[in-house]
Length: 322
Image 1 (cartoon, rainbow, N blue to C red):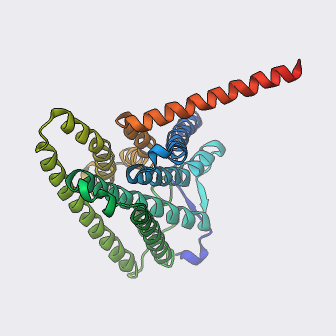
Image 2 (image 1 turned 120 degrees about the vertical axis):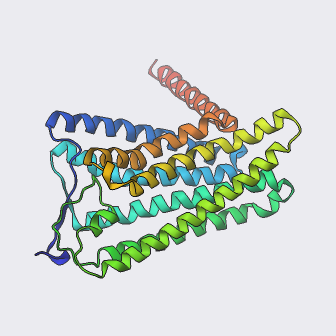
Image 3 (image 1 turned 90 degrees about the vertical axis):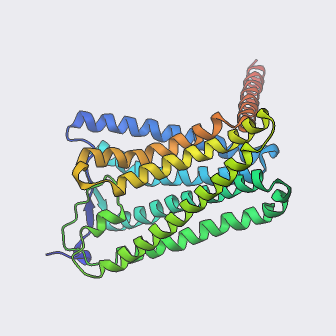
């Protein structure tokens, strides 16, 4: 039997069995990655450059886009590399880095979604206290606390996971390194420490879900008390994107990890992992931009400015050549 000290690399689950399908997955992942980079990059640029978007709501949206970019850049490049070179290996340190960064960005994503729920709750249920409860300093402190706590929490999980002796081989049933898959390779009772950490994580996640549900119950009650239909529509339009993103994030994650073993299969597990780790970061900017008129106006203004600058530069270069 081998242990973790003798393992120099792990074997990831291949995305396809044939070379043609591997190349197809490569191009598919490339397109998804470019879409995620474009969508989240546009949101980050618009919020950073347009002073009209310097609000708590869009500040947290900028942070959410950063986590989406980080999570997709953690898993997809290695999968694309393996599909291109027809390999399934990842080094021991590369696997540890992938576990740390993926857990870090996913946990930060959920923390930010919880904070954004609090932002919507204060904006609708306590509008007179919005500037006090969500001032610039308070927003910076909440975002910093989310990033710092998730960093330390991910570091603790990663260190604890890779300190376990591994004696069940080095093949992972996933196309990227993930803590539950690594725990399956351990044959030591010390894995109970990591299971305990995962239980604590589940409790914290459940606590955040209760907070989100309770907040939205209060939000919907407050919205229904608004006398004008236009006011109710405006209030709902600010909440629906966040509610859609939370529902997509939570439903895919819960179904992936808590589905009954009777319906589990390698193809289904692979499809679900691609859905919650790759597709979700692409859909988030699309969901938020469709219902956010301020963001759409800022993006339109930014694109118009870029085209105007490009035309001016092209016209100047033509004049210089003449």
